[in-house]
Length: 146
Image (cartoon, rainbow, N blue to C red; front, top):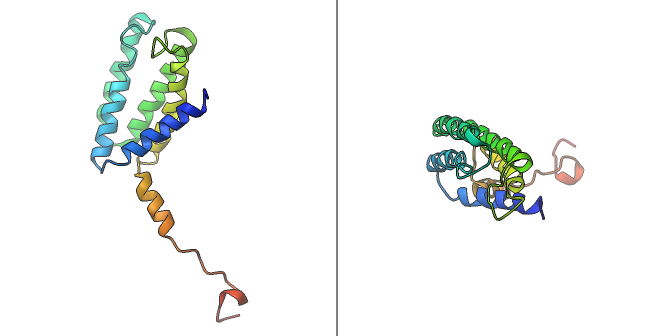
């Protein structure tokens, strides 16, 4: 459950975000990744170092307003911060001991989707389902040159 649930949450987030049309999908994701940079500000346990990620993520989010790759980079930066918090500091949710680990598993799912350009998974599925299978070549396939 420690691995499966965060992956499922990541896929649910992708499905929800797929409902938005471009360019709003990218812009909303840029704002979300910027907000994720501030997730540990309320007592994350690393002192002044907690101010580094929000500063970096603000820049990354700004660049992400026009580029999916920057949003993916932001989710990977947040993943690294999650790992540090899981090992050395306070969890992202104080009442859930392994919440930073779960976030570190979920965030790369979002990053991979962003690196793919943040496509609508529903449009992708429709395109895949509408393709007709190729006709086999050979005597059974009706190739006139056989």
